[in-house]
Length: 164
Image 1 (cartoon, rainbow, N blue to C red):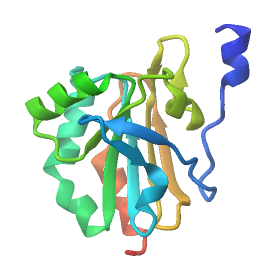
Image 2: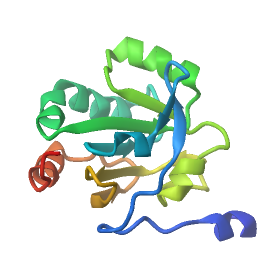
Image 3: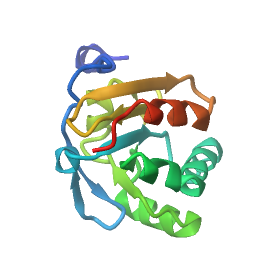
């Protein structure tokens, strides 16, 4: 890692702290700002790349269990460093009804804010942040490369949130 990238590295935001705000475009090119979701919970899911095996499995599991998130008044936002064009094709192919956000340029800027940017590979690590209706991080996990996240952990974390 270069000295400049090492200096730009940020720690994963702490549970109990404020979620860093950001704005990215979704698969349709529409701007999506995290702070616009105040009043509801957000499940922020960073994943390495569209169309890859583990990522597709994880996001399809979210798609197939979307009621779990809706019941907790939670919106799912999935973030990768793919372009909005790739994300649109991916969402159409897999029938995702939640926003896929493009952290494409500046490359990985939001992943860096959340401490999940892997500078050696140029991709996001598998990080999840559950943010409450007031914008506070209530749960976070960063899984090792190649290890999928567990839907049961989402279920437990969401159960601990109050519905807004």
